[in-house]
Image (tube, rainbow, N blue to C red):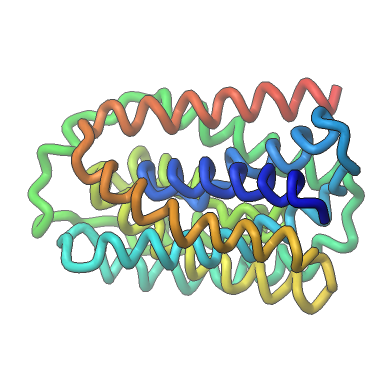
Amino acid sequence: MSIEFMIIIFLIGFIGSFISGMVGIGGSIIKYPMLLYLPVILGYTAFSSHEVSGISAIQVFFATIAGVWAYRGSGYLNKALIAYMGGAVLIGSFIGGFGSTLLSEQAINIVYAVLATIAVIMMFLPKKDIDNIPMDQVTFKRGTAAGTAFFVGIASGIVGAAGAFILVPIMLVLLKIPTRMTIATSLAVTFISSIGATTGKIITDQILYGPAAVMIVASIIAAPLGARLGQKMNTKYLQSILALLILATAVKIWTEIF
């Protein structure tokens, strides 16, 4: 791996992880298409979808640790929600990560595109007054939280994305969780999801450890910086940034599929 290529991988990891800390996602919504297409555009050997999903899985593990650490003591981490969604998403993501070897490159990309499409539709749905709910009065439907997290875990385990870009709109739209609590809590749930996905990818030998190591270093640096900025930004801006990122990624992946 040349120095130039390492710099490109580092920048992909840094940009994705900075945004992941800011809007509460693992960053794969950005890094997956960048890893898939940018090396080819710049004249380097392409990563396969299996390799990209493996790199993404282990990178998200470290990015979300750094992001959650930045939110410690903020009061935005909902422990009950983390427990219900985290347990379900851990089981689902391991199943998806382990079973992804049975799928073709095209199938993995389709799963990713479907997830992104569902997420962007949900992000543009109205979210009435959720940010007016006091943090100590937040409630949620436990069955809905665990059930949706399990199925998201399976799909996200397949693509190595840990599923935060769909978990965030689920928390906002279905569970009615305030934006800042959603961002912090989704990082914690995504960290748990990445444990299952990464374990499945390692067992099935889908990870390129050189590029993954570069991405991890970038994540540890960038995710806390993004999280600090996110705590200061207007919640409507944060929702808009995430919605536009998911929309752009969904359009790009579907364009490539067809």
